[in-house]
Length: 202
Image (cartoon, rainbow, N blue to C red; front, side):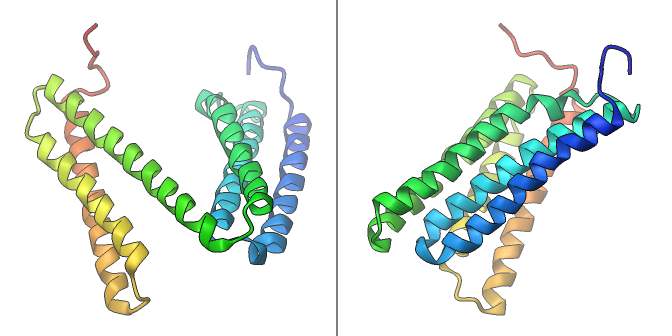
């Protein structure tokens, strides 16, 4: 495509370091799993996967351009945020493994940290969408996004407390599905009301 210098061989070579990182990440996760409490191993797994995804999407971005499919700039734009956050989590997990060896001492703060991130993220998303709904004169959607938030919170609680039974899994999946339906209902309503053309005042 005009303005880009990527070729197919160049793009394919860009996958090589991504694959090498992925192999290293798998070996690390497998080798360190029994040395980490659940929260730390989750931190390592998420960080490694996010960092791998960042590199994969960046290489895919170049390949799509080289093939003439198109320049999907979002794949390029999310590279740095994904890679930096992924590598931060990966490094943090290994440092915490070495610094705090007692599982009980480490697991609680990490668990609360993850829950805190989830609450802040979901709360920000649902509150922000509620504000957008008000500005688009769709105040009824506030209730939809509030219910969506509570469904997400309930799903997180059920996932943490479930006993592994079929009933608890069905309940968790039901709450999750309801939350996703509410989110889709709210976002779809905003979309039909002109979300793409809507401009925030100020």
